[in-house]
Amino acid sequence: MVYALVFVPLLFAVVGWGIKSRQRPLVLLAASLVHLVMSMMAMGVDQHPTDNGWLWLDPLGRIVLFCVSVLFSICAFYAVGYLRYYKRRPNRFLCVCMLICLAAMSLVTMAQHLGLFWVALETTTLTMAPLIYFNRNARSIEATWKYIMICSVGIAMALLGLMFLAYSTHVAHRDATLVLGKLIASAGDLNKAWLHAAFVFLLVGYGTKMGLAPLHAWKPDTYGEAPGIVGALLAGGLVSCSFLGLIRVYQVFLATGTGLVFFQKTLIGMGLLSMAIAGIFIAKQSDFKRLLAYSSVEHVGILAIGLGLGKGATFATLFHIINNGLTKGVLFLSAGNIHRSYSSKSVHEVRGALRRLPWSAGLFLAGFIAITGSPPFSPFISEFGIVTAAFEQNHVAVGVLFLFFLAVIFIGLARTILPVVLGDPPSDLPDSKYQDRLLTVAPLVLVMMIILVLGIWQPAFLLRLLKDGAAMLEVRS
Image (cartoon, rainbow, N blue to C red; front, side):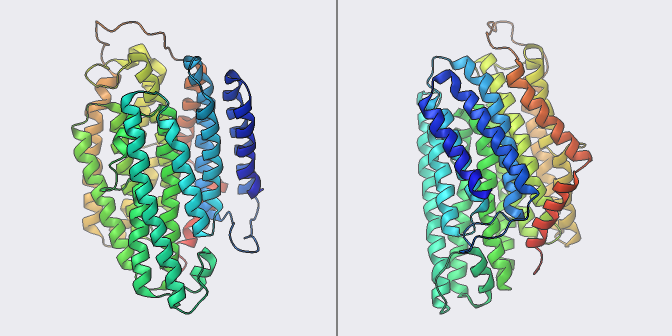
């Protein structure tokens, strides 16, 4: 089953490469549905590591796989309607690269060899680059190069970190390895100096890929210029995969019994910095797609704080991976609809979207309410769990700053999003051929319903999955 999660998207990618342009979106949709079914089946089956320990879909990987598979299915459904507006534009690279990226993200979730994990994560970087350039203009190519250069430097830093991690086993007179299970088993004997050096480089590497401040320079341009479907996968899928890399590093430090406090304090510090920088730039942002980029910076900060707090916050942090991924999908896809209708991303030109695109604008507004941690949506549950853990662990300053930044960001987002959605459209606005359609709205309605339901009731399989994942990060705390 685990192998099929990788090979099936690749098989569909080969099919998509060879068929006619109009049929490729349907291949993309079929692949996503098959992958979603296989992912759901994998959730209910006890998985065991392969003989060499390189592959294992553990509870932590299943959480990310669940988020990625659901989000990709929504994006694939949306892509069928989206690409109808670009019939004359080639879609081969878009569909094929999305499928290769799905295969790579699936491999990330099950890779227990940290070198294999790195290869899979780097593959996502390379396959997303052509998608960012889909609009084929000067700003999109600039955003693409910025994404490639900064993320490649970051992932190269992570590779150095892995080398240091492997060398720490050699210095400890053990066989050099990057298999997670073996690293955890011998963690107490690893050389502390090389282990700490590995942590610094891995944090910089995976933090760059996530967009943690101050390593987020690629995000505003990339999210602002990429199509909404690509922004959704970046903010919901690739961020989750990159964060899983930090979780794997956390597992090793957790097993050492020493040095975990330094790891946690650094994560909390970078998380608070990310929220602060997001708040500053959100307050002055006039491009509503770039606004979503800074919202993503905020939420990777929240994830970092939750992981840094450790025991007591891990359940909420893992839940927030899902909540952030799904909610970002709604925001980016609905923002893409509004952008196409107005042919502008400027808040000075986009007004009264609720009158022009009632469904898309309504979903954009609902996504804003959800992503700011407002009840009854599920991000409220996960954010409340993280801030509660901060106060329970006597991290009062962290809890107070967390709440303060949330309030600042809420106000900043409201100042931009509410005028975009409410009021009257500009009187000189030309008519647009773009209107709300079933294929570009129904997927977003479905996701919004999931986010609402998860805020009120969590199904038993998801609770069990989150508890099992949290147990893996707390067992030695």
